[in-house]
Image (cartoon, rainbow, N blue to C red):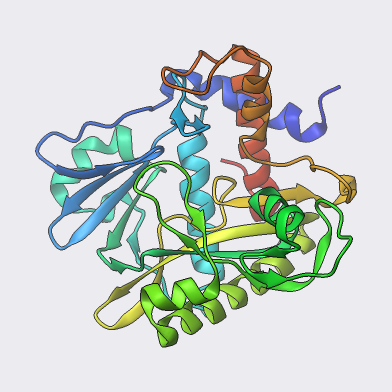
Length: 311
């Protein structure tokens, strides 16, 4: 039976299905990167980041997009950038198309609600992951070694159990495929001791603040990853922040350690794909309409719960 939240969200999702954007084309603007979700354009000394509705699973971009996903990712990042502004500065210049350089405004139909003009930073080559619970790759690491990224943990922890205290578990950025978990010592070897310590401390401060807010909204923030870069000598929080794509959010009321948890991300898509005779190599199979709609509901519900707003 649909929940009250789903009854509110579903009509909105159906309304915007026809406006799903899985690629962008800004004629005359230099596109410098295109990832699994975002298209990035050079705008003078700055960058324009556009979150499409693309969705990937098992390192493959799926044929269909998820209605409103790019807007959810962008608006959720904007919420957190503002919420965390007294913890760490960020790279945002503006998300208002009317404040973008004039040549960009003619692409309003592709940019409205899903784009950010940001400072171009020298990004650190380490993903900064904070974990408060044993899940995902951390659970696999713990089962194998009794530690996560070299950090020893108590014996006998269950899957999804809360850790004694949050930990910093960096990852080496991969040009393709999954990032690789590394130890803090490896992070030091990559970026230097001073920078590694700074990244660790800022990451855990952000996680603590975000966890407190999420708890107040009935949500567990199990883990999340951040990216940082330097602009004119200042360390800035960049990319996306605390979205369902970069974070593991669980509803508090259904949390039970001892196995996987319900989540507000694309796990629903992964679970569907696991039922197929697909070798997880391109091309990815089509998604049925009900899987697309249910996944869209999860993204929109995450935004509603965290921010108290609807898109």
